[in-house]
Length: 264
Image (cartoon, rainbow, N blue to C red):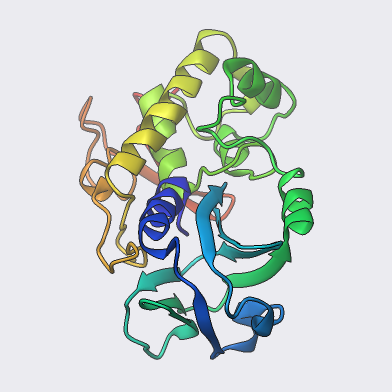
């Protein structure tokens, strides 16, 4: 699933190429992938493209928005070719935007400004937001005895971290992903906060991660580059720090990689 760095990469690229264009036509190739009345957005000018957590919203003139969640395999491709996994096609005044989705879990919704605000007020701060402070993280951790990795993945607690970056953050922080969150206190919380910010921002700078499933590509169909910097995720050999064998387990149904010596 695209995580915050991937979605932020897409948002920034779409904002450069879409703003000022008008939506001429919406072609729905899979009914559930586009929710709402397409006629309402036809003829509307795109004002801005923004992001919250793992969602993108395309701000249209007037009171409407297109809210997009890529879920597991969604892709937004500018000037792309329609293929067998294409679910929605937007014909624009100067180009075309296609929505591909192999597994059909992703969606695009037509929402009003009020509906958008009501949805976002239920969400926690993104990990790159000013509101995501050490104190905020400390409070979240102290409230639960769940495994720390599961807490980082919980989008009701923190916004934007997915499986790849949770693995990397915990490795950099020296924290075992199985440890109860409420056992992480003091200096460890500050380290964790530091590496959450650092790893996510590195991922954004590298244009996201295209892991072995190769699902993520940017708006121009190109892969990310952060996979070349990964220290532990999908590392099937040894720890780059101490040489111990990297262990892979399932935690919350997700592949979890860690070093048994460096992460305590």
